[in-house]
Image 1: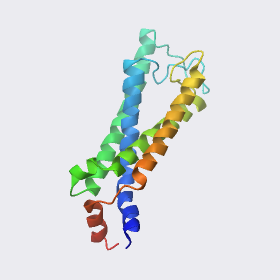
Image 2: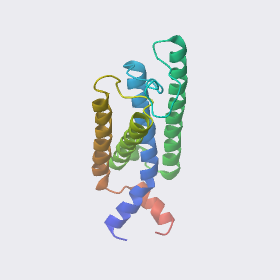
Image 3: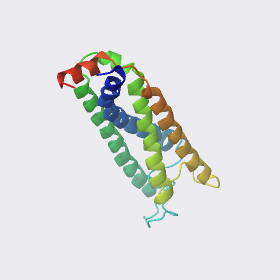
Image 4: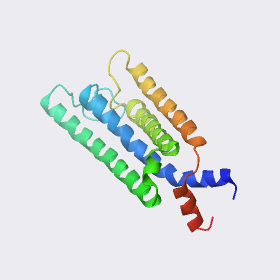
Length: 181
């Protein structure tokens, strides 16, 4: 097997775990930074102008904030599960040299791809299709939402480039050799 074919197959072993980790970690950045620290939005904070008819839960009332916080919690539970699943997959696929994996360009590239994919999917669905919340509601909300999508596209492209030519490492070679590839 040629070195480049081995590299391609070897890094596929961490593409799924890295991407899933990126989805979870990107969701945590969104939830912690935009929902909690900056308090720019919550999961249902724009349902007064959504596209699906969800009851409006204004975040400046106690009952509205309680409902938004509940849905933020469901969102965080999803991101937490994504991180756990990504770590579990990574742990099951990387049996040696785990420290080397955490320093690899390939893993961090796939994590960036996952974070960017999170931004793109969540941005398109929640900000545009459903319109249940926006990055920052107000007169420039479309620009904030488009910026969120642009950041997602940059993260996907940057992550793809980062992992694209990353060298193979022993743990992937070992795994491939064990399966007779």
